[in-house]
Structures are given as structure tokens and as C-alpha cells.
Length: 443
Image (cartoon, rainbow, N blue to C red; front, side, top):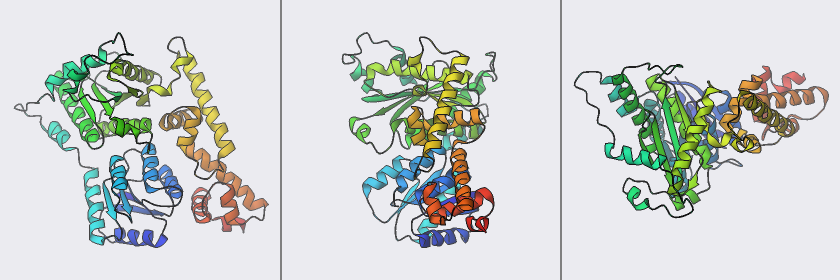
């Protein structure tokens, strides 16, 4: 059973789409509606949402921005975008962010339900090449090495030290023939959990090859939809990605590149765990311009994964989340703990001072701390024991309860003071938190 969130700033449209879904006969559990991006984000943070159906133009937060924020929180949430305008730029942006469909108003009921049905059917279906690999246990199965002639040159590109990085890379034309063009690059490395804590192999050589093959194809299925990336085996049984952007692609500033890289990293981890029942660690480098810096980016991805020893329950590491420049050598466990505590305390202070701000996001809190939203969320939960957004809601609810009981402020005035864009949104969250409506509590 799937939970669906329908978002449109016209309540009648929300009601109509919810009604269509309720009578569709699809395997739907809960249908939640929201009339703004901010309200929808609260549900995405607090509920188990599988599919987001959102209008593209809504007040302060567009459907594109909502989808982007949703995927930061939960990269595996699927999305269908609805628009009153058949604008190619909007459609292109939505598909690049991973939208499964782009529908034009006024909606045709059958077309809408067909789109939802198509998305839901694909949710629990293993990725095609992965399914083939996992079911191919018979003796005559032969795995074709993907791009075998590419593996050695691309691995060499990641390890080769460039003597004069300030000059044009002399082998650029050679690597163009392997699809490495850039000029902007990032390196992602995916390390499968093939050995135990003592370095002893957990699987036979045949099984390891099968897991590598299946993992590589999961990754290719995910990145081929939205990215220009070379995906290939590393020399240490992990999988490497060289992600690249042209000048034109990189100039598009509609979403943060690092957030996109983290989203795809978390999505890779999620799908490998889901389909292969195997953990993996993902290391993500920064983004640099110039093929001559790929060896630097490769070392950054390796270094990012080093932190998995300190954060065993965290799996996707971005190099820029760790203040390497503050240490003459890699920080020890005590220094890491001090740094983590400082990040969380700074985040708490910022939230306490700004929780009443409308449209406050985890992304904004993370930006103030110079870390990624996902890493901040992880640290906050690990150190305080509570979810970061739950802490925001807690402060808002405690303040609103005090205002209800000790002032004569109206509901819309209290909603305004604690950061909600509408009294209806405020009332929904208040009732979910306290079990009674604001008016009942007041009585």
C-alpha cells in the first residue's frame, strides 16, 4: 500500500484528485492533501510518503522547489508534476530532477490515473538488468564485462598525478574518446560490504562478481536517467563514477550541484540495500573544473569514505562536510566528536533564534553550518536523539500552546508568529502534535 501526497494551492483540485485516487482501485494506503509547498514539506518530513503529486506554480514555493526539497529529505520519493503551462523549460527541469511525468491542466482523469498507476507499478519492481543478474544463478550464465576496454584507462585517469595542473591537460583528446569531456567533474565511489571487520571475504569470487555486476547496473539505471556519467569497476572491487557537466549544464543554477550529488548517492545506497540486501558506503568529491584534477577528486572521494569508521550507521559521505583545513593531519575520534558537537550546538542556536521564520528549511540551517542537509540531520539525530525537523516543530508547538493559553491572540495571529503560512496548516500540525485542535485546547 502506497501513501500519496497531493499538493495544489487550489483546495478543490486537491479534493478532486484525492477523490479520483480513492476510487481508482489502486493499491493506495493514505492520501494526504496540502495547499502549499511549506505544508507539503511538513508531511514529507513527518509521514511515510511514496509519491508526490504537485502543481508547479504555488505561492512562495514552486513545485520544482518542493520536489527538490523533498528529494533532499527522501531521495527515493517519486514525483509527478502538474502544470497549467506546457513550458519546455519547466518540463526539462522537472524531468532532470527525477519527475516521472509532467501533466498539463486541465487533467484528463484516465491519463492522470494511468500516470499514477505506471509510477506505482515500477516502485517495487527490481531494475531490469539487476533482476536478470540476480536470477541468473545457473551454470551457463555468462556476465559480459561492461565496457572492458574503458576500465583500465578510466582508472588510470583517476590515479595519474599531473605535474602541472595549472596548464591544459595533455591527454584531454585521448580521454574524449572514452566519453570524458567535462569540463566540470566530480568523482563518486561506491564500496560494497564484501568483507567483514577483519577484512575477510564474506562471499565466493563468483558471488562477488555477481554483486558487482548487479550493483553497477543498479547505479547505471539510476544515473542514466538524469546524469552524464561514466560508471565502471574500480581496481579494488568498488565502483567508480566520473560525473561531468558541460559549461551550459553547469551554468544552470536552479538547484545545488552538491545536493544533487548527495541525492544520487543516497538513492544508490537505498536501491542497493533494497534489491541486493547489501550495505555499501558512498564517497563523494567536490566539483572542480578541468580533467587534470580528476586524481584530486578521486582522493577526496576516498578520504570522505574514511569517516565511515567513525559513523558506522551513516553511509553517504561528502568530502566538503569535514573541515579538513582545520587539522594538520586527519582528526582523531575526540576531535571529530568535538567538531560534531559544535555543528549541532550551532544548529540548535540558529533554530531557536529562527524557528518562527516562514519557509525555514533544513537546507538553510545546514548552509549556516557549512555542511550538507543530510549530514546535519544525521549528526543532530545522533547527538540529540531527536529528528532536526521534529525539534523545529517542538519549539513552534510549545510557543503556540503558550500563546493560546496566555494571550488573546487569534489562531491566524499565532500561526503567523510561529512560522506557519496559513492557520489551516498550523491547525493540522497542532492537532497532530497535541491530539486536540487549537480551539479545543483554548476552551
